[in-house]
Length: 304
Image 1 (tube, rainbow, N blue to C red):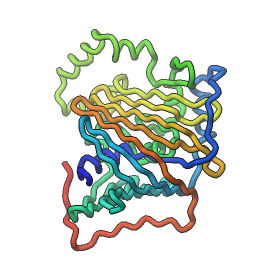
Image 2: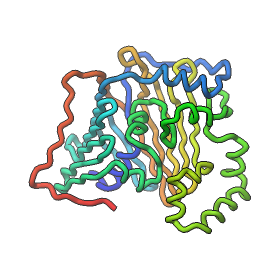
Image 3: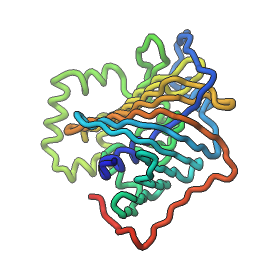
Image 4: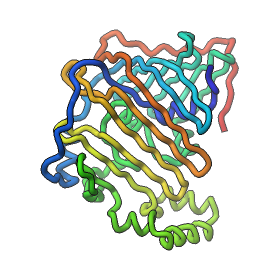
C-alpha cells in the first residue's frame, strides 16, 4: 500500500493535478519575443479561473530504485482549502486537508492522525512554497518564488532567457547563473562562505533575504495559451530544487488544463519524482464538501 511518511510529505509539497479529455492545445511556435513584464500580464490574464475544482487522478511516485502507484481525489476551494484522498485498490489510505495556516491528515491504515502548521513543509524542505503557491501549482497558474507581495519589484527582477519553443523568463540573469551555479570557482566561493557560517546564522540570513542571490526561478510559458509549461525553483543554500512540467493541455468547459503533471523534488541526499494523470475534472460544483473527522480510534502522532 503506502509508505506512510514518504507519501504524505511528498504529496503535501508536490501536490498537483488537472485536466480532462477533448480538444487539445497544439503549440504553434512562440513567434515574437515577449519581455517579462508583458509576459507576466499575459500569465495573469490567462489564469485558470475557478471557485472550486474536483479532480480524480492516478499517480506514480519514484523514490530512486523503488516505485509506488496509487489513485485519489483532490478538491480545492479557491484561497481556502485543499482536500486530498489517496487510495490503493479502491481503499482509502490517507485523507489530507491543507489550509493557509494548517496541515492535517488521517492515516486509515494504522489509525493515526497529524495536526500541524503549514510552515512545517517549508521548514522540512527549505522550499518557500506557501498555500497560495501550492494552489497555483495544482491549477497550472503562475506564482513568485519566493512568495512576494511586491509584484512590481518581483516582475522587475525577471530577465529574458533563451528557449526556441517557449517564452522564457528567469529571476536570475544568465551571467549570474553561470557565475553562481555553473562556474566551479563561483560555486567554491559560495561553499566557503557557507562553511564560515553556523547553521543558525545561515537560517537567519535566509529569513532576512541576505541569500537572495542563491535562489531563483525559471519559467517557460506556452505561446498563445500563456499558461506555465515548465517551472524550476532552486534554493542553492539548502541544496533543494523543485521542477514542474505540465503536458497535454485539453479543453475542460471553456478553459484548458494539463492532462499530465511531472514533479521532481531534489535534495543533496534524495530525488523523488511524482507523475500524475488526471482521469476527470469538475469545476464549480455547488455542493462540494470537504469531510474530515477524527474519531477516538485514531492516535495523534508528530512529524519531526
